[in-house]
Image (cartoon, rainbow, N blue to C red; front, top):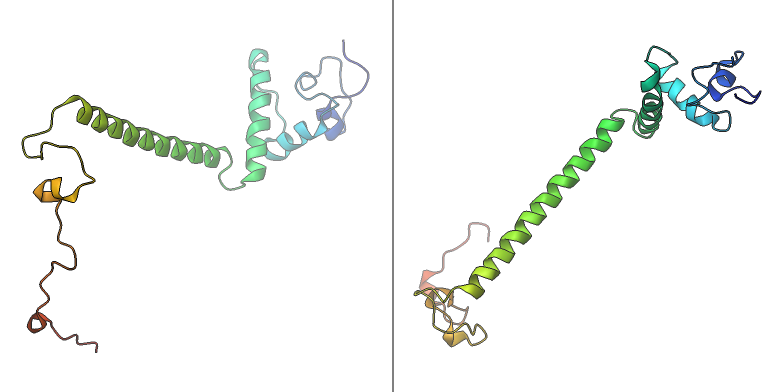
Length: 152
């Protein structure tokens, strides 16, 4: 049995709250904002079966709050944002797993035949030939090979 104060729905709709009011269990008088936001977005209806009303009330409160925060997209905007975040995190996870696999393969397998026998990359002379890129001092700097710019 309920107390004599009307539920938030009846209070907002300015009607007498009956003992068997369908809104009373889901919109108590202590939380008038909960019904106000749902009513503003969805209106008031009692067309659901009794066993689904609690979930519907919670869902409508969540959706109404999302619609107030983002009037254009509502919950869809929040869902889309979270899906994008999940996709980015999955991509980061895949990259990290790939890096771990490469490191594990380097540690587990012997050096391939095209690499120098040592793994000392600090000594530039011991690096494989394909890693020895010419520095700017090794580049041939013949003045006759210079071309004039049309901009100067």
